[in-house]
Length: 343
Length: 87
Image 1 (cartoon, rainbow over the protein chains, first blue to last red):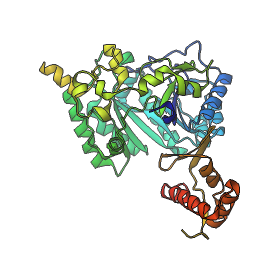
Image 2: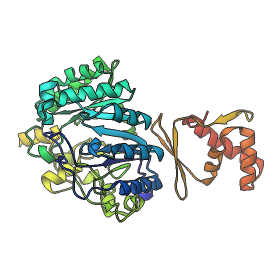
Image 3: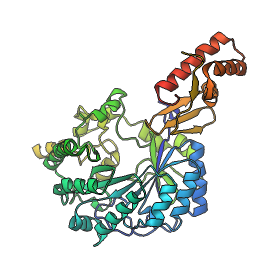
Image 4: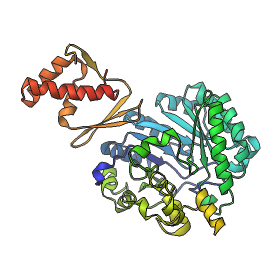
């Protein structure tokens, strides 16, 4: 397939590396802002570059995107340029003013982190009081009738609290509960928080149960956990399309304007300070490498797996991080773990 | 197709114009639709005109006979209706 066939529908834009929390699993190791982050004027130029390339949707993320003093101006500008906007935030610094701006900008949704009940959430987020702040933030967003998604990053620590967090979310009026397993990268690269194979299998069953029980109360989405039988995966099967859309319909802009296909690992596809987004999207060899990925070349358990076309070996960035090989097996898949135990 | 029927763009549609194509994105379905220049012309005049009016304007714009214009316009409008871009 030529590069003309890949359309940049959605861009995830890390506005800053600054963050007021210290999450145990942050794949960006966020905390302090980078010294070379894009200025407000440069951001205006990048927005234009994205528009000219035909991008429809921008997800502003970070770090904590609301830490930027010019966050409101950026949101207003993106709205004025007719982008569909969503924001991924830790939810702790949302106030009346920010909620009003988000409402005026007609944001599609705001995703906030909700990792557990008070003690667990504060532990995983690295700040006492983070839970109370995010609950306040959610209430504020809902008072402004803004669509809220609650993201729960599931680890060994909070796996038994999923139902409680789901009920809490529904009670707060959250529109969608979104469960993801912890990503074994950044601060979580040592694997201490990772789920083992039996936990992942149980997690999948538990999410199926919770979906049936609570789907009338709240939208529920959860990661595939290495199981692909759900109806929502059918379109991918029909079109022989893999789930990971990095460099195919999405990519990431880092705070300093570097474009990378994937948020988990920065592989420089281009620099928006010196190139247009359209040039990077169409011509970057890094983008091309992602697009030419062939699941039939996967190695180990992933190479033998009957789900390799839709799964695509899950996250290729994780394979690179842990094995230094784009085609190595995914170390976080339950099937890979089971096979390792059997060896 | 009833040629007296008026055709309106649905709300919740975003558009982007690239050098050679028009891309429409439906916020309701999350689907993209890519148009060439002739289909783009039809889309742009789906503003409450009748199918008949659209066919006439299309025939004038591209200097083709009415039979061809009718067929092209009905095909495009049918696609737009099926995919929820016009009503």
